[in-house]
Length: 596
Image (tube, rainbow, N blue to C red; front, side, top):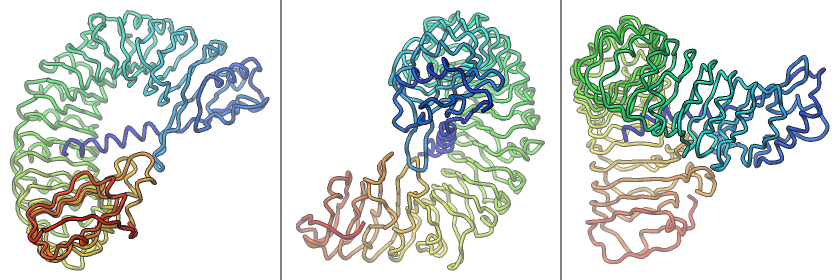
């Protein structure tokens, strides 16, 4: 669960990248496109599938320089660029992309310098090798386009190419990378999710262009870091995540002093971080997650004054958490907005110094041994959106003062701590949460907080083992909404292992849309009310519920018809727990036609 929660911002970021619309790149309307190039574009379109009508303007006898995605030279009317990236509409959960076949007629566009076919769906077709004959290309992006097979060596003929991205095409591979030496002008190379096992020996040679500024080789089945990278002294971006590197961090890495973004996550790097890492003073993004690194964080990291994103999670680092904030407070505290120290061996207490990191938006401290109270200065972090501190040793009281300025807080995940949340009965929080996890806390007063009624987008609620008592109010089911859950429409409510009593109100909500209305991902509702003190009749249940736990309670007036489930519910419910209920004599399901 913790890893999923950390990845959600990343997933949102990736989807935002995928949501660029088709560019409207038009030339000078006084210089129309060339007739032969207009015919070429129509021939190119003929072999494409276009279910979203992205190329609806590509018709008739008009000026092709005004067509969607076409860029022309203002002086000559020649087609210079095709901006045909697909997109994802998060509002309706639909992809808008092209498919079919890439027609070789593109070779007739002799002046083409820019070709972007990323984020489309070419159905696993082979990479079109003829693209290697588009000699004028400076920009070629085929990422996320569902091409397949061997990357054609003919791409090495594109000697003018500055930007090449072939990343994230499932099943892509290379036989060798000798052809890279022909791309002497290349500044950006993206080959993530490409199988490079057969070409790893070529990467050890100095085949990479010396002008390279960005290199993306994540998930490439590499076991050794290409030694040629050490010579790429102009590198600003180096992403090598999700490979099989099992070594200490190479010393030559600390000589790449132009690096702004370094991602070595999900490998097997071990040993301590060298103090020389502090030499990379241009770093903005540093990702070391999920390795086997250990030791304390060197003080030299305080030299990274431009750092905005810092992830050390899932390693074996140790030291006092207050010392890390002290190091970062040297000069980067004003810039850093993403900090992940989770799943390490950090100890000690948080100090009031936390409050000076006023640009923090994402803070992850979970799965450590951090103790003490939560400083009230947390309330100064007015930009904070995600606060994840579960599975620590925090203790003491968290009050309304801790949340005073947290108007943007979306996720507060703090399970498995010895904390008490003390709020007034009429408190209205300044935030709107989608995720709230307070399992094993204590609540003061010890009842389901009335302020939950103000949370209109809450989709994940865990207040299990908090000692709350009383009845479940009918309004509880109406606080959960999927309106803002375009990526993962799921509702989870866990109030198990408490002292809740009385009858369970009917589990249905007008906020839960019927499943047929969700075209992208089916809504799933999971309810856990097990191990409480409920009695009376069993509730009516919405057809959206896919898992329900009512076990270990004391329903005493159960009858055959007291548990009513709709016909749609029968098709969707995957898990149902109703064990150790007193007076259970027989069980029958009847139709439920009530509104869900």
